[in-house]
Length: 243
Image (cartoon, rainbow, N blue to C red; front, top):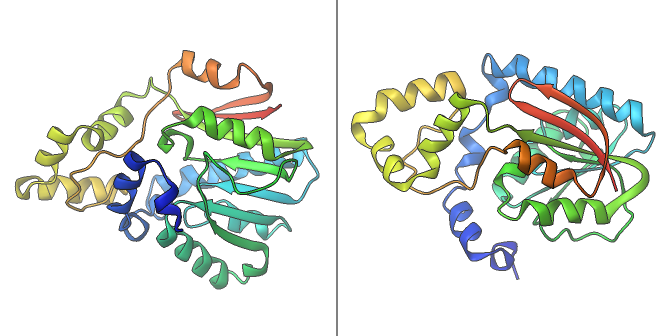
């Protein structure tokens, strides 16, 4: 049975049509995102070194490996999961290019139902991913389950207060707006957004399950955890937690 057959039907429909995402979404290669993600990587590396000495890392929503691959160069054994096999293929190819494939292990998996035993990982990353998971609380519970004592869980949470980001999300979350946005007459506008923000220039008329979190929702996510640290990076909160 493939992973897509095990996913919730609503999520499965969205992401099956969204496979081209792996080819067109590379914000880390465009200014100002290149500097933005370098800063984020440095912050995450700082948190990991400060709070744990463990070397077994789980990267949830690994994408193309923009966080796992640099960390593997520092000796971390990285297990990267994603629900898109196209993303995992890109991740594997990038690891090969950087000569760190032996330390990077792509696995097709669902964050809401992790295929790992309990007490497994020293470091768990969920960067630029939690807001795409419909049952994000279940995903956090799964992280707690596979967390190993004296490790650290790092969550990256986009905040609701960032209005420009919400406008961009709105283009993809509302079917009516998405139909207009994907029309022929909006082609120049899509090209500009693609060049500046890295947003895909494709005819996409489906909702993407992304969201930004309110302060109340953030509190609800961490209410049953121990908050170790919190950093604000632009419109995101970088939270370090433990059970």
